[in-house]
Amino acid sequence: MSAEASADINVDEDGVDVSPGGAELLLPIVAVVGRPNVGKSTLVNRILGRRQAVVEDVAGVTRDRVAYDAEWTGRRFTVVDTGGWLPDAKERAKAIATQAEIAAQTADVVLFVVDATIPPTSDDEAAVRMLRRSGRPVVLVANKVDNARIENEIASLWGLGLGEPFPVSALHGRGSGDLLDKILENLPPAVPAEPREAGPRRIALVGRPNVGKSSLLNKLAKEERAVVDSVAGTTVDPVDSLVDFGGDTWHLVDTAGLRKRVSHASGTEYYASLRTNAAIEAAEVAIVLLDASEPISEQDQRIITMVIESGRALVIAFNKWDLVDDDRRYQLGKEIERELRRVPWALRVNVSALTGRAVDKLAPALRTALNNWERRIPTGQLNQWLTALVQATPHPVRGGRAPRVLFATQAGVSPPKFVLFTTGPLDPGYVRFVERKLREEFEFIGTPIHISVKPRKKNGVRGRK
Image 1 (cartoon, rainbow, N blue to C red):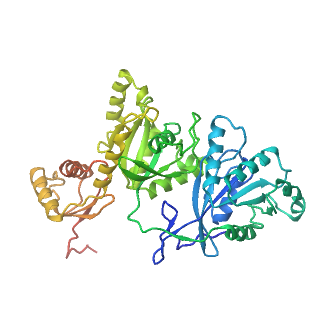
Image 2 (image 1 turned 60 degrees about the horizontal axis):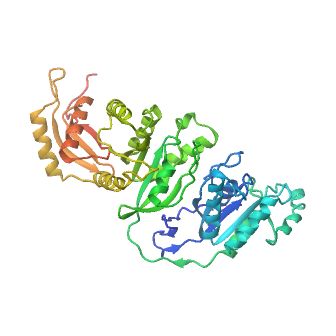
Image 3 (image 1 turned 180 degrees about the vertical axis):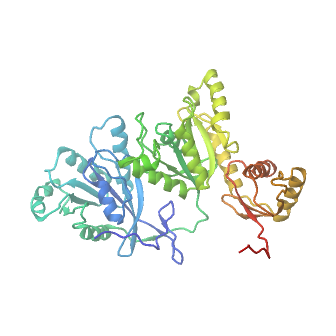
């Protein structure tokens, strides 16, 4: 059994249920905590009823607090997956453990997961002491109980002092229904939320590994929201955070660094790539972070292409500007001309997540990109401009005739979409010319725009038999 995700679930970034036709409810939080590699993420997937959390048979795959929406017997709640907790952890492991402790302190119910195939360890006992300090209700989950024989051997877990252990097999689903019932028994009553206006704008923070995405998130948030380490690939799951900067609240999603094409990735990297793609699709604007101290790479360009093809607004941030000297600045200018010439419309900001340099310029750039992403040009104004353009620069003659542009309309926004009605197909080069002039006239910076051509159908033309 598993907690199936309901098609009616509609939860915003604050954990507020905003399902159509229902009152807003603040969703309770269930944190999943335990030592590394005891099966926490597998249990999260079992609760969700879908493979959402990244799972691999290697300790330390989950590093940050990652929240998911779940439901069981009609009751909605938020599940928070955490990294492995260890006492006396150092460096990156300490940052991961701190995130797990914060999750336990802010949860309504804590699932403490242990490996039932081995006796309780000193690390488990230390974790129990930490959880008692949190003052939250704790449910002891004995995972990896794949058969009745193992279930008969979990009596030693009573010694942890958390009451009856609940035997489950997160991998096979054994006992998960009983565990979910126990979770619901410990959840507080649903609390109506205060009415609220439209939510914060969604930003996906994307880039290659180790370009400083998590550091930038932490700098903007003015606190440690994501684990930062010099080792590439620290972030695996997308990490959602509500962040106040530039006078507004933004919904930032820190994503995994993308090393390869999704089709070439494997294991954890493959699923992390899928989640990064999903984060971009769910966002309204993307900040693509590049390392200004290193040459612009093919993977940097591939990530920019991913954002453009998703139709999201785009801001390119060159991070680590504190490491850029005069020679590198000159080389970078040449690289931008050569490697980014297809996106001259993208807004660019030079920042340093380490020192905080120019991070205050990100909010104005994001607002500009979003405003242009949602801009609509009145049909009359659009056609008046287009008529003057094609009269000044008509389409080249092909085969003795030149197609004419008859009319244009804006078919949509987010991103802006335009349709040209013509007497015949247009050369791709002429369509690019119209796009460039459209951007110059209406200042569509920071957003992709789509132009499609609809040639007029000829009536009364019959083919020869």
